[in-house]
View 1 (cartoon, helix red, strand yellow):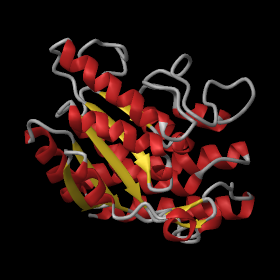
View 2: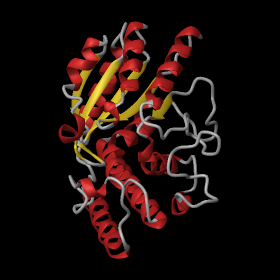
View 3: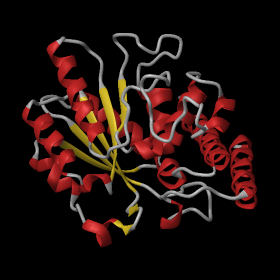
View 4: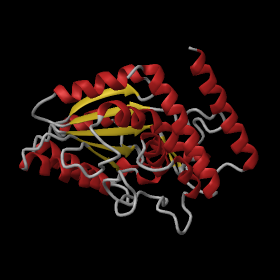
Length: 278
């Protein structure tokens, strides 16, 4: 798929995110928007998935370990056809299947229920190990947060994955450098990420998480890497695509009011129109 088409889809994903969070009057827009480009690429170019058969045995698996970014996952699943786009307006409603964190029992396309930080990557490692034991050819992708990486369980999972040489596993770290209480350095710095993953026998790549050429090259490189898992550390902008949210920690877990919702949707509408002019 051409980059321009991916950019158009990612812009629609961002609209879905804002729609859902605004309707819910709560949620996590900042880290959802920073992850939107990578998730778009995974579901529309990289991964073998089929919305008509979401439980196909040979499907690739994606685990959103930073589960609070559920609006991004739902938004991509909606664009891909796993669920109706209009259901984004039910986000976080008591009777909705689109809860604040992903629910594998009720939401098609969700591979792992997430929420408690650090657990998703462990589940993904288990899936990758199962693939090896079954001699299956599916691949497993998991996205973790930079703040999440302050959890010790992240590194226990990484140690196991490296020791078992799980080359069917790709760990994607969304490094937007902001978590709920401030910058990652201020709260409890887990840097340097590259050296830590290398110490656990990972092949490490560092990219711009909003550049589709770099995303494509990194994932191709990961697929060609044998004998060890890959960690892709992607530098991103929290709140990417909505000017007043970009690099603002207060948009980690807050919903826009009606006025700011209108501003965000107008910005994204204009961004989409500009892409259509290309």
